[in-house]
Image (cartoon, rainbow, N blue to C red; front, side, top):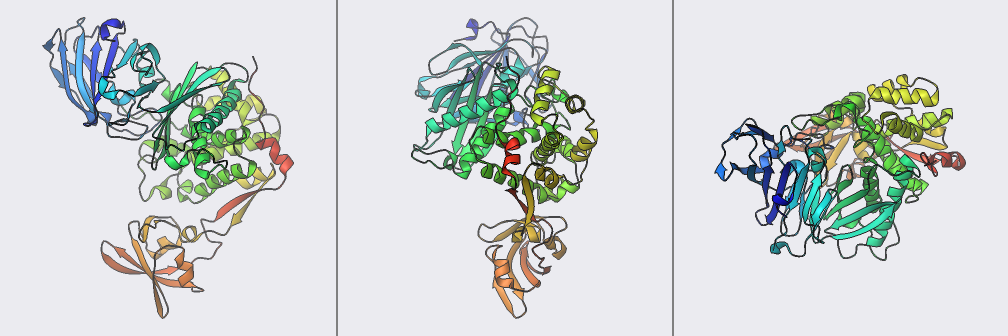
Length: 593
């Protein structure tokens, strides 16, 4: 299929044959360009809040009209101006290097291809709302490959290669493309066709089980939002890349790109549910829930994405955090995990927050705003200066849900669906949330939202959980938490983070130190792992830590804290199963047709 067969104003032809060079060749044809047409490549991809400078991978950009070269002027790091005349088709050719195995950018080698449009497709200024088409070629060198994407097909071969269309640029770049000899299957959830694509899995993959479990997640989510009504999409595609070691996902309007470790997949003949597989199901649930909560019911600041710079919002605690609350909860409601497993997952989130001193420094709303410079650019001080809007946001959602349920007039489920109805599927502002809470519960919640999301006070977790049959109690902390350390124990004890207010900070430890040994009166011991500290220290409360810093040996006086020191961990137990069931059991469905 060539551009002549397409009536789109903007057409991209992708040639993925330079697999050994890891280069995509792109031909962009603008049917009716403006005089002095400007073009740019996005600097970020929605859903991943970091300026990634995708233009660093673009090379060999050339332009022509009627076969004659057109001069190009680079305006800044990601914008160009074609010094063309108006009305005559403008053709641009360029290459994009594809070395990123993550879900955010582009990858190409002899075994697999993947790309997001934000990495490959120059934006034609002034024509963003015009129809766009994408053609992906499949020459004989890639025989045996298939292609999957959420884009609407126009003229596509059985392999999936061919011509696709999008209503506008936003839709074009919101549909990632997966290519290669992948495994693929389909299922129907609430009347909607879903395709599951798995690339790189081991032969032991139990595809039937994965398909069945993902179907249950999708049905639970659709019923949550719409009951018996149809969701706002007619087809959905899961693109799962399986690697030796990896984890992550990125949501899109009718698809998601995922990455997981090979050992995390279910295996033929294995009836148990390993922890890694539960984690993968939680990731799938998370990204699928985003189909509503952030892709459509999005912050007002994201009503129209600005691809040229950071897009700030204070509401990631709601969109990422509440999605993180529901991802595991929907697994429980779908019967994919039991109460005990769900409570272990929740305990992990609570402990992660409690072991982050930054929660007392920065509110989760501020953390949302600062995602561009803090969450996505973590360093040795990150746990001391900020808090995760995923983790604490999920716990704000938990507190709000439990508080609403305790009062007995509504639930967070009802609030989410009412927000969808109130905004027509988005966008929304925090004022919309407060208005819906007032309407459904009969009272003002600005105090709680102000304290939990905009303040740094501790969340009332123990009180609210107790009201729903769950007891939260402290457990003796592990040695790392007692000392206030995060370490890497590969070939020794290497300090990654020194937590604020802990014993290690008081002793003078710093990130980058290697803890070699400890001394007690009359003895010295080589240290290979942190758990050996109590072994060698025995009953001593004062020891000397021998550390290496920039090849210099140092002795640090360390006071060993007791088991009840800061950074304790907690656990959750069911105290009243009947009461807990009302929260953790099957939810009431959404609106009926």
